[in-house]
Length: 360
Ligand SMILES: Cc1cc2nc3c(=O)[nH]c(=O)nc-3n(C[C@H](O)[C@H](O)[C@H](O)COP(=O)(O)O)c2cc1C
Image 1 (cartoon, protein in one colour):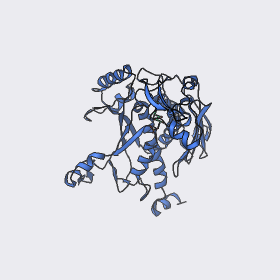
Image 2: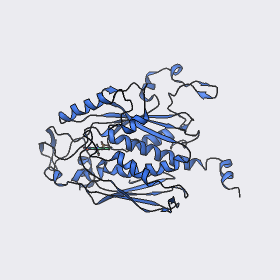
Image 3: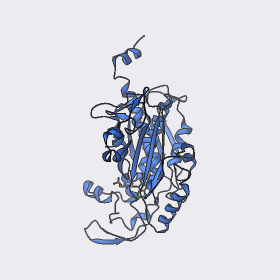
Image 4: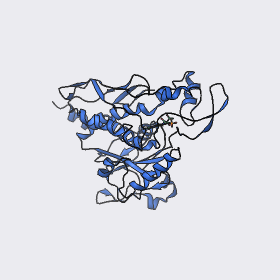
């Protein structure tokens, strides 16, 4: 489906080479200062064509707000936003319109729907993630009222990992590849250039940290905070795994070393990644999101066409050598969206909260 969220929802529309992409965000309370510069800046972070480590497609990605904002504040009515496509080159895809691009969604979309928009992958293109970034930026305007901050950046490329000792979110914001550690940026860049030179692509991982989350976000049993995060993040194109706290490592540990000790009213470690029983426990929320390599590479490969013939193809088009780089902006947006949704839901979790709202 194209609608996401529970109390806060967004519905997205648009294709990679269609006229425009956009979304309608429903459930944002009235009275929030609407920061259009911040929203545009988030889209700038996701935008292609900015440097040699990203897809060269040149898009302005200028957002237009059509409703839900009056005199600089949200009105409590649906906020709708649109971004027009400017630099789609559909002819790059015409020659191979009957060939299934390996690892992309061409094969499954064709067999599911019987019709396939081959122009840049149509709806399956990550150009759609513009809508996720818009929804996440608007969610962040609500989170800002509660000082909840979300940061994401690249923690590994291929087999090269940062050591997590020198994470610098301010540096990350200015890094061309959103690298979290200044000591690793050059090495990561070199790896990316090597991959590009080889006409190949590479997988990478994103670390996310959320600060100032109150205790209590997450709805048991089926809308746990960790399951909501995994749902949102696995929904991003190319994401193949999500870890919370120690994640996969937890399955190698003993309870005596995994358990986060409670002392002097705080947790001394954070193997749980800030979530217990599906509910935020007041510690940092820590997530790792793992992206596969970009499907579109410029090395000849074997595939199949729509008639079932074996074919050997060489791609044209403009592609990211590593989708996690721009993907990290989308991860940040979706984490923001989930937290805003759960913050709103939590307002009705207790009678004393409700009484505070309805005391006249
Ligand atoms: C920000 C971002 C940019 C992407 N750019 C490309 C790209 O340039 N070329 C490509 O083949 N796939 C790209 N992808 C990945 C595909 O959209 C994705 O692999 C495809 O839709 C198949 O979905 P799946 O990988 O989730 O199975 C990108 C993904 C993200 C999140």
